[in-house]
Image (cartoon, rainbow over all chains, first blue to last red; front, side, top):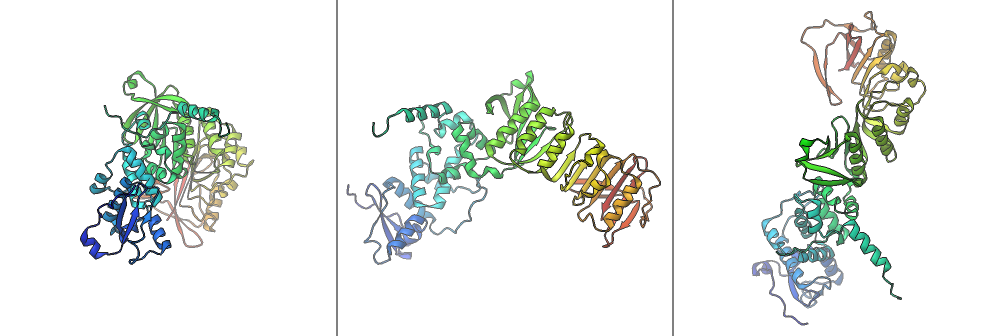
Length: 179
Length: 329
């Protein structure tokens, strides 16, 4: 499927200020433009750019395919990275338990349905974006507040021991590839 | 009604799963662990082996990280109306209610047995060593020994240990002290034979040592406590001469960490005389306070005594109580 490039999320002022841009193609062929400062938030993408030897001159001519991330998630990721590209580097969290305040802008960005959130975490994990990962995990962690085990089982889709046992039994009973 | 799609966190890679679990407070972690065996196994991912686990038989609770308590109360009719649910500890369903955000109360007929069950469940769940066990003479021997067996099977050091229950054999005490090194605070409440001090090679390295029924503590045993910061011996049989010898040893630097000593002995007599000590006039209401190993001590100085290195110690001698106390300045 060929899709026209998405409208770049970066603002004109930011482009002027930081003219190096990279193109990323999602698994469903959406094309995104992202600034150098923003793309550096993804360790995976930045390593790739460095290894491919992309520069200001050839970056836009060499789009980077990211096969594990769809357009919807990539859009959220690009928005996030552009928003936080000039943030000061934060120390690694030590204690974690709701150690940081989740900014309202990010809470809004991550107000998506659970399936999308799940996929976004997988994408964030793949692209190795520390801050977005922390924020996503915080949103998911907050779902546990004041919940009983029965409620947690529903929220986090945790099978009971009996269901786990039944799944294991059916997996071991099912014939293998040879038949 | 809209059906919410679950976020299947147990299907996530370990990095995000770890980060999500780290957002949980202790109650949420515990509640999560109650969902299934797989959920319980997952929580070890976040390094719960460094948690601080404390069992207090006296006050009937198990505490984690100074933060969250599981308290056991005897099941009574008037408590049942508070019950909000059941939780499983080692396959036993237990009525519970939340007393506060930091305390879950569990109701059970046999308080001590249940406390042991909860302790055992939590120590396996978090996989962490036990930091302290506090006990007293009302605790059934069986419950206390089961806890000791469990701890000794997993660790060789404990920070705080109170050895006390309804009745312990001398061999049990010996076994515990040989298997577990107590580093911060040891309280030994059992009555032991005078031979106990002679028939073992247990060394006492706890910073704070409190021994009731200390008949078995010989002068040699006292010397083996030379690295302690605070020593309290109640009901010992040490004599005036033993006390004099102790001070000679202290003066020569044999108790380098000692800050406080208290010896109660029926063998002490009013003519206790400490060679080289300076007798002081006791002024009413002019004692001194000092906190040593977390305990506040109030003290009058009857004698001043000087170590060879210039350290000054104050001695208080209560003739009626046959009690010598010693505070290092």
